[in-house]
Figure 1 (cartoon, protein in one colour):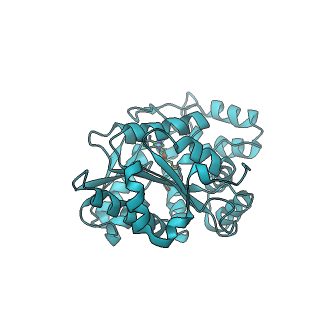
Figure 2 (cartoon, rainbow, N blue to C red):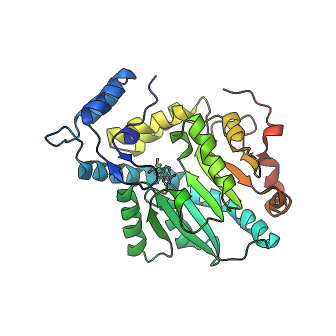
Length: 311
Ligand SMILES: C[S@@+](CC[C@H](N)C(=O)[O-])C[C@H]1O[C@@H](n2cnc3c(N)ncnc32)[C@H](O)[C@@H]1O
């Protein structure tokens, strides 16, 4: 079964600068056909090209903004903002209590897309005035739209185009939603190593839980709530690409980081577990984080405690 997302193939950027590169439609169609995904190839075949067969960047941007606008519904319905605050509240309490770093603190949303999460955090002021909110994305079009929406709503958050790990100012905490499954295993390991090597105190990344029900659940949701065939297609592929609990904990357990999975498979109801976070923090913070977290802390599991076999 194909595990290529159309949105990953129709845009190409230089990984360091986010500078856009031309994409030939025929090459994308060829890759999709090679992977056996004729339906995806047909979706791409309908996208406009110039005389050289290069995909029209403006049409691609419009399409991605449209699909991400629909995708916001997923974050709204799964209450990703509230779930993030449930973890970040105790995490920032532990960071403040440790006193190693003085505020203001910086929360960086890696691959922020349209910035729904940060706009929600800014609108609710859920983390307090000493936490600066910065969204970063390699897509200039998505970041531009995130910025426009934040300004229209008068929100105190900002959006930057580029690589989240090349910011001039360091993050205190990195977060993301729906980004991890875009990485292959080696890229996932590099992603966590980059955060461990940075001055950041912690990270918290939400992504689709790799349960047997995830692909059918994703199909139902995207069928019901999304109109564009690209969004429907990529939604199901995302669920197929989701990393297992074991793979996430293995990749995130790097020197200088205590990695914990919240609600791992086997401890939570698979009908309710749609997305779940991998958390990493500097080891001295773990005690006060768990204390601030209270009883929910029992649902945090490290690599040493994971008993469920890989799917
Ligand atoms: C599927 S989108 C998720 C968007 C958003 N978080 C959401 O939930 O709607 C993944 C995004 O991650 C971005 N991305 C991946 N790695 C990145 C990095 N190192 N720095 C900035 N953006 C990155 C891609 O450009 C893409 O727009």
